[in-house]
Image 1 (cartoon, one colour):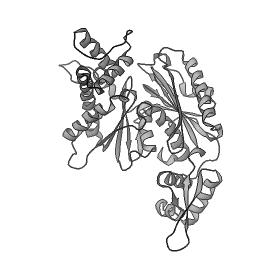
Image 2 (cartoon, rainbow, N blue to C red; image 1 turned 90 degrees about the horizontal axis):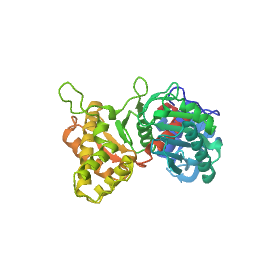
Image 3 (spheres, rainbow, N blue to C red; image 1 turned 180 degrees about the vertical axis):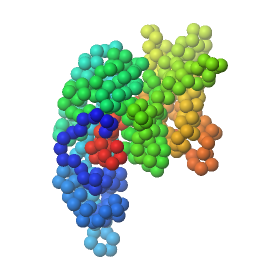
Image 4 (cartoon, helix red, strand yellow; image 1 turned 120 degrees about the vertical axis):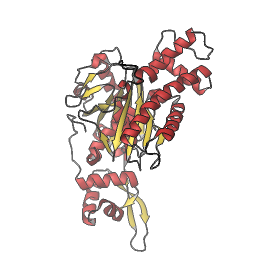
Length: 402
């Protein structure tokens, strides 16, 4: 867990136990003999670790057998519901709450009104109620919940568990949100930024297997990057790595150019759509009466997928600007995997992915050594919530990788 996060009490896993559990989770069903070979420890150590995990209900004997010419080997598998976690994606427009099992599969989810102008205490109380509803609806007892992961936009103080700067959640700046949510839900809470959380979720679910250097680009109201190198998250000096949206592009003279968010984010696409409609451009896009940028961006994205010419131009322009940043990150960090995540990609994500993939093929510095896999996140709109829950499970079940 990041610094300052609360930790759930209870029996901690040994180093070998954690390694065994991670191997069973990612490679099971698997035998004790195979575990000893992969973990590089003695069969006796594996037997001891497996017995402890069976006693805790985290592992179970699957009933399957593997015959190798001698005594059949009993196969082990994970009980995915033995340990679960809650993930919360705190956004200005939507708050998403999910419950995932130990494999990273979503057991239940809900989405409620965003936190933009609401009183933070009111929002936190509402999140606590939603957590209770999800647990009751899924039949998961609190004793099986390792904790709550909270993904937020903006700059963070991970020691204090607070949002220091957020352009979309002004009322939350300076609030010790991690501890306040822990008090509200009665469970330990881990805090991280939305892009990093989304990246961890992809890794935990095994969707980056084989990748040495991975980047998840998360776009909601803002744009950020979560980077995982060698299976470990790159957090930087203060845990605030990856704010791509603040990157200035296309400098003119001595003045900094517009930021990536001012060119590519949903509100920028919505603004250009309004300007085009006001100028008389023909389009099937129907913009909102109240000028809500998220609603307008959704309308543009839907029309783009359906073949509307103006909408297609607007999304393509946004995607090209976004690709500028992705190519820069890919070359700087030599990544071999890029995932697009966040609510902005929920409708027209495939259009963005196609542009990013094309640009990387043409502009990757190390193209003669490797390619870059480009994909949409498994739970594209809710990736930060799923990833926040995965952060909790990673610390609880595989702290070696945290």
